[in-house]
Length: 351
Ligand code: FNR
Image (cartoon, rainbow, N blue to C red):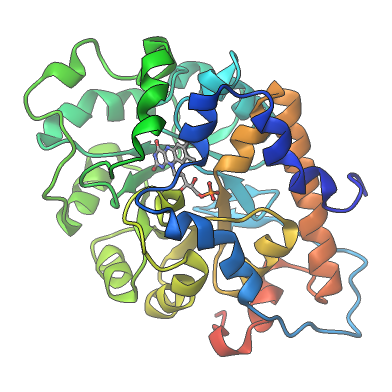
């Protein structure tokens, strides 16, 4: 199958770096604070140890998963990231075309530089990511546009009451960014209105409100604790997404690899559980599934691949799926559900 070894995926960041301006590269790669959480993310998956099955027929491996009632051909999808048009002129539309062809889910940042209509026209299954403003009613037009364009879910990012401070040089991207690369799905003048700043008072009631307002399943992104995960589920969340925002919000946050088992244990099978952060290889995908995730999402590597437009993102999807299937075979797993037995300490019973 496909790409030789993991070398193409492993070499992605270095190859992309050569095609990105310094401010863009720093914007993509940065973590907040001293980048402790950003730096530990990938290593944390590598610390977990698997107990593989043997003597199992792995001729036919099916890596697909059902997410919020729709089939995704891969157990991984595209996390929301902003400024995709700074990476490639086709921006989110290139990512969407490749993700549609791969039969996976794309989460679209509310800061996207492509319209919902253009993204939806690719046929991709897409979910809208939102931050809620202090005045919730100001989110209405954005939500309406997304529903009208066929978003299949709303992802509420809850780890960003304020945007964490970056190293000063990382802010340089905003000096060179074209305003047309971001937030094109908001109405004109949206950000000048009082109450448009990020809400400091988010609560479980916002989950319920978003579900009522859109009629869509709500996914809560940025949960790192079992008790918070339970509050989300009790408030009506369809899924909880374990994330540190790529180590870009509270530095020194626990790695998602270490937080995931507690969240899965707290949620049980009442809601879906997703994870992102530092997933770079098929072995990382397998490990995340084993630790309790129903699906895995990936941020920076998609941006690295997007340097080559749609073709780059298509190759990323194919390479990661190849590696995932190889890892599943080596572990004696025919389906993502089988992987739950690979980490006995965190094993969860499937109904
Ligand atoms: C992000 N992330 C993010 N999250 C979100 O909810 N809304 C957003 O607009 C963005 N924008 C964004 C831009 C860039 C450049 C990066 C790198 C990340 C966080 C993203 O969805 C995801 O949580 C992390 O990127 C996952 O970690 P990895 O895969 O990048 O290690």
